[in-house]
Amino acid sequence: VFLRKRYLVEDSLYPHFTLLGQSLGSIFLGWEALMQCVPDVYIDSMGYAFTLPLFKYLGGCRIGSYVHYPTISTDMLSVVKNQNVGFNNAAFITRNPFLSKVKLIYYYLFAFIYGLVGSCSDVVMVNSSWTLNHILSLWKVGNCTNIVYPPCDVQTFLDIPLHEKKTTPGHLLVSIGQFRPEKNHPLQIKAFAKLLNKKMAGSLPSLKLVLIGGCRNQDDELRVNQLRKLSEDLGVQEDVEFKINIPFDELKTYLSEATIGLHTMWNEHFGIGVVECMAAGTIILAHNSGGPKLDIVVPHEGEITGFLAESEEGYAETMAHILSMSEEKRLQIRSSARASVSRFSDQEFELAFLSSVESLFK
Image 1 (tube, rainbow, N blue to C red):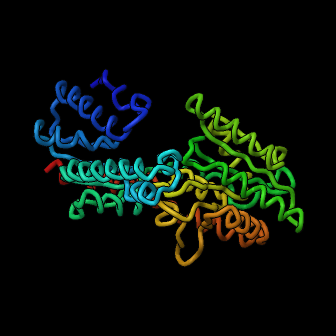
Image 2 (cartoon, rainbow, N blue to C red):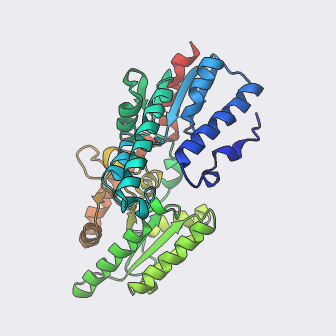
Image 3 (tube, rainbow, N blue to C red):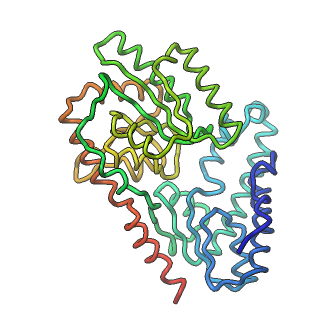
């Protein structure tokens, strides 16, 4: 069914009250779909929770939800409540107690309604423990909620040798992720600059940081230029490279040569890029929060599979620690990491997904 009202859920259409605007827009989009086809089973995997009561009570459908990221989370409420600046909480709001109070009321009302519409689901699947905790808190349908990890094509990376492949002296550090504000690329560059300062005082080999990611629009391109400027300001521009929208084979080449894979997003719901690094045999250093902390970078059969950090200093110290390890120790971590990510394969997803939605078809 081709839908012509897709534009109603674009965030660019709602510069203010974006969550509410997109949610109301999704109702009109859902109505258009319902007028063209009334299904027996409706499964939302796009995050359009406000369409659920529409299909349940007007369409008479059985309802399934696969939640990748809650539209609003208790973390978002905490950011506004504590008047912290964030990519979804502008500085001018944090500086004004009245505006902060108004936004907090708006968020609490939205969270209440979000919980009501989400509770219309007969089956709820979430992509991580982090998402599970938030959905249980907001939707309160624990009896029909379970974790179904998203499909990761780990098989594609298994042909990369686990032994370190050196085409040049020194070590390569890579980062994979779209150049979006929440990915927090500045933290990677600042931590890398600290690492280079440690190298000057120590005996680390030559190092290079390569930031690999996609640019969706002009805003992303501007963000990359700001990151280039940051590299220059910190005096590390010769040691930092940017690879934009590169082919997959080139990405695999970088992963095969990299010693460390960096991830710096706070409270990422899952972290497919983290899984890909581990499958490729790159030692991951991820943010100590969200999916990487709770589901991915966890011990496998008693062996560590990667590392976690939060601050610039923490990242710099952990990178230095990884680089100071023997090749044998790094190989052991790579092997454990690769073995651990088999639970995120396409095949595992198919089994978990089909098992979860089976009750919708009875």
